[in-house]
Image (tube, rainbow, N blue to C red; front, side):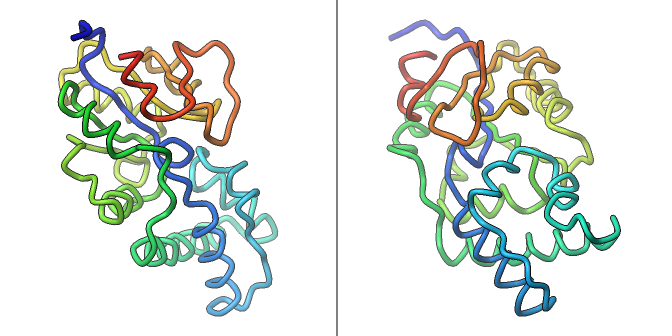
Length: 210
């Protein structure tokens, strides 16, 4: 068996574990049209360009014509709608994800840190049934902190000596740089990153790296 270099693997969600953008876009558009009577079409392509950012920043782009307080109210309501939609229909998972998590969790402690709203990671775990593979998770909705600080909190609270982070955007990479945690780039996701620690083209590739 390969000697372990790391003792914990921290994952992003969107673009790394699953691609929820089609379901989320439809849920947001439907909610805005039917409940708020707002004619804004939220597309999956637009969400892919925004995922990884803080929710308040996403709201500022999509609801740019509204005051900040209203932006936050609308995006919170949209998120509640997306949670309901994702609980009804699990978003597409990346290739052989469960098998990768099963094998990884036998050797490492696994975590999730994402720049999402409170409840989103729980929705992912409920929809997929993957809760047994993960030791814990954090997001800005839980702590009020951005990704770098949440990565550091997971590292500190779980006494990790050699963690690594798996994500798919430049924002993920920058957070890891700030936190001092090596970054593995999921090239099948939504972003582009130069000079990561390693690159994977599917989740199972992690088993060859770690």
